[in-house]
Image (tube, rainbow, N blue to C red; front, side, top):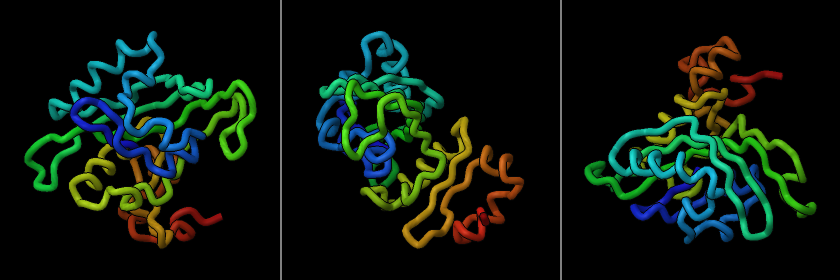
Length: 190
């Protein structure tokens, strides 16, 4: 998950996204999202950012980022408006990202390797871990998870399922009402 301000500048890039993408927050925070997008993909991203800043959600936006150290990361994004604490005024964009591919020109320690696909099927502690503490942003994140084109669930630091989307319910055969607040071990026994 990441957050951007009204100008589209990334202000938060959570640890989970950094881990699965291999891109540390320091490489993207403070930079406009659109500048990180490959030039051939900017046309698709600009209207989605504009929609989010006007209060509308965009789903399944495929975008390739080009980073300083030669990495290319392809993300599937869901973008929604991010509201102030009172839920009255839009203050930026909240993005939920699934990493489709992360490719580096040379191996980098601690990151997804060259040519690997890093699917984020379980977003561990995505809600409440990096500044997503107020209920409005948590609700927005759950909406993005539910709308995703892939099976996703969010698990808190206690191992309890917080969000469980329709695709996950279809895949597992268990309704969200059966697994929300259950431990991950109970929700997905091995």
